[in-house]
Length: 513
Image 1 (cartoon, rainbow, N blue to C red):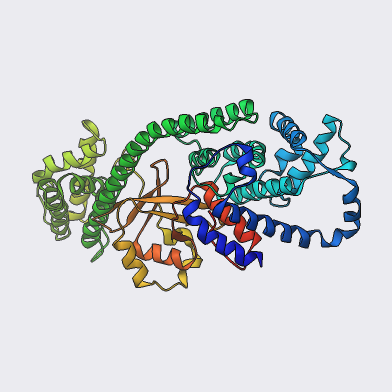
Image 2: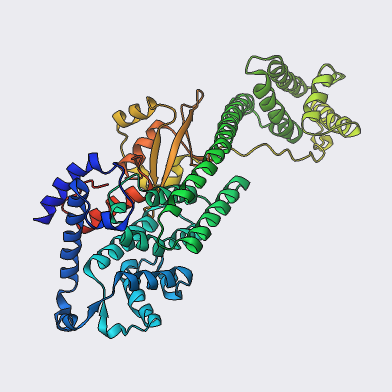
């Protein structure tokens, strides 16, 4: 029956969960209204889960009556010890899929009680305290499972486990009150850590601030919850400055993507022009083919990028290729005595200069083309010359692989849902989506720009860095594969809390946060 009560309490709790409330422990012991119903329903679900899990340990339960529960003073003292000097086993359990963090926490609390002179054999946890530890442990288990957190980030978030158990003992409303300062602080810290690999200076500065906030919380938090409000406000101010840097990074990501797409378009057009001139007919002499495929192709690409497809530089480059090929055709007709390439000297100099060839080196290259045409005209192929070695030109690499390439074989069998694709075409700039990798890790991406060239959508991560570029059709396939979903604008705590409920009550996925 607690499952039905959970759903009813959840529905009532939606309106009440955001209400402000006192932070003192006494009020938290007897929260009223919908929050109280939610906490009671959570307690019953935990009790049911625990009784199923412990069913096989009935023999041990006989001894429970002879054990006394640790007092709240003892609990807070033990937790303060663990907060200051966490054990190696507790640290190892953070994010360890093979062990329940809640169970490890409970074991550590009981074993650490010996440092207060308490015999673990005669002590047990109060059921309400056990609930608090179970909820916090499961909360962090879910968060570490689902969030895109690197090793340093996992360590930072993991150091918050014990302080949050203390908060749960002092003020259970943390679990049901969205505006709770501890909850808001965890949301902000998790957002700062998520997907943060420390690749940029701004990311490293952000992680440094996270570490500073965590260090202060661990060092200064005793039983006064006001520190969460202080640190949350300080970190919020820092984040507002950081977000301005994110906006700059996002603009750069957009400009980079726009530049790459223009370059790709210019490359494609230049390659098309090259293929139209080289595919048909007799194979080209080596010097002519090398000229067209290397310096001329680069020069044409840059001309299209700079002047557009109808610009003067583009027109001149195309005319040069046609002129060289026309003179090659004349040479093949064995016209003798023609001053080969004379009319094209200025254009040839510009092409070779565009790849870094100057002075005498250009003369050598043009002479090789001239002598090759002359050798063909005289039917003496042994006199053909090769171009000299040309400087390597490093253009920016093509844009990142498309999503379909990244998804690989998964995407092959998927038909495209045109309705989904159409929704992505109509999506507003600034919309957030959740991207799920093959390991189930979730990272939020924001639609920053839609290409007018390819209609691909550019998504950036929380730090304004390019995260995904995909077509509407590719995104529709990702939806089919369960790799993309709507982003629910909840913080890490809120999302993890729902995950806890789903694990406790898999038959009823009611929203309780």
